[in-house]
Length: 223
Image 1: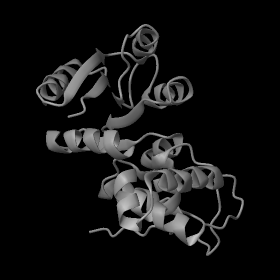
Image 2: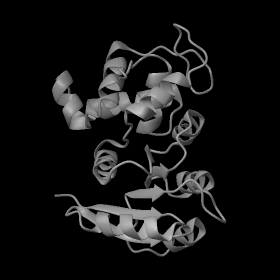
Image 3: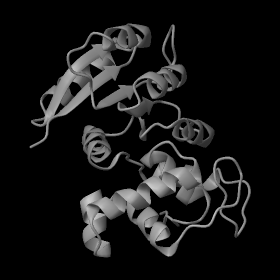
Image 4: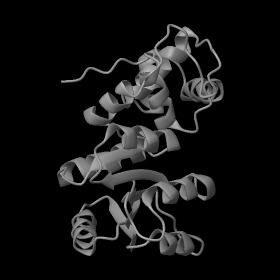
């Protein structure tokens, strides 16, 4: 079983220590770092012998907030996936953070089982978007058109294969699972994924999901 290395950055001591204790008890999790301050975390990352796969980040913190910390991690440590854990449930915040490249967005009133699911899903597929996030991304789309446009608002054309790969990515299929579903090799799947990143201008898998939902390539069903 692959072990998932985690960092937790949250300035609320009781919440931080309680969540850290629960995550430490999960068999396949390794808690590498627990910090109340994003600046300390960024500084310690430089000398850590192992870096986390996933950083769980609060939005509202002193010195450096979750937005600025996410930007810094995307710039300097892009291999670290970010899950936002916050009290802010406004759709504008969700859209902003996903557009910045975070891999998940959870509210602090969610249960621990969803946090664990989000961590495992992000480690496995590169993102975790629950129904609330998918709905927010869909509602954030202000300009509807039959033309698909990339992040620079340039019209692009996706092949049928690329569109199919993108839809399976949105359904949280892994590279191996996509290959099995489409009867193609994992290397071919990676080729389609790289083409999608180039065409759309997205940075990562989470960005591809945002692109797909916003442009109607993937139509999520909401309750």
